[in-house]
Length: 505
Image: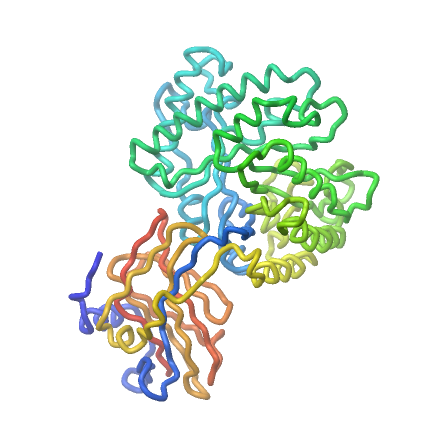
């Protein structure tokens, strides 16, 4: 990937073919970090914060751009719901799902949190019983094939085998302990098969597993409510995984609808009773505004569903409490590593009317009152050194502005996970007035440019040379900060930046 031989001529040739200013020789090129220029370009690295919390969203399959616009780049995202029966409609023949939902997640710099349902999505050509020997062998073969498809095409991913197992296997029902043991035995085999498949590709380090539990664990007569000692098989499932994951929406009907304490109590229960030494990720938590968006629709009184004002009140109550609980001295003991809101936008295509209105943003793009509350809360959390999802630091402090402006030295950039990556930070003032300001970047190979201009994000795809108008968010006279990342459909990404410069017209 080292294309240093391209040099100044190659970088200039690449940029000349991608549009740009019509001003020709009248454009002023930032001449790098020379005396008095005030311009610097420094390579930075981001590494996971061991006490941090990754904030993300369910992005309604293809709404990654809405997340980027509303709350900026997220470290991780809840992605897709695949099923064995849909993929294998003929024995051993696999029709894989639309790759865009996975690829677009990585293109936007987010870690994939995916799910594939197997034990309760059995194809019709097998016995609908995961304990049946033929079905079991076929299911394990499918898990191996699915993992190799996922890792082979998209690289790093966090995978759930059998989604929301409490409701789908009815483990909240009295007397369900034998079903729980049955499923746990299957999961242990499936997890081993998944790891074996990753190892065969040489990609063991790119696969993480997390079972997703759900529902209200405090229901009367529920075996789950009796805790880990009564359910050792579920502890075994977590021990065979990398994380414990939760989908939780339930509330206490004795408290106001905007009271978020039930969410905290559920998370604490799973941490205390089942997590063991594993960290916890909330993969779904949300509040439907169906009372406004679908008036007259009966709402489940046990779940967080109400008006837009009540949605805003719920999130306003939740965020400070969640961060306090996740301090080392809090009830979570800093065991919570991720929290994902369902969802970034409304989904008019959802089957249930009340499920169409979980977004922070409407399908038409209007911010609901909760949107600025969530946006500000995430910004505060990510400004906090304890809870920010990753720490960034200059790699060596070397100012690369002159060499990158001239295209005389290539700089490598990698992107491995949503909280582990490298980027170039351009800082400068520029002229006190500028009509048009353009960012020009050349890569060694076709790639994708994820850029942040003074806090405003954009993604440019599938080119080796980029010439983009950044005038709307550039501050004449400064200060200006532009962060440049290289992404791809598969993680990890390795790219060479041949040149980077800002041009003023």
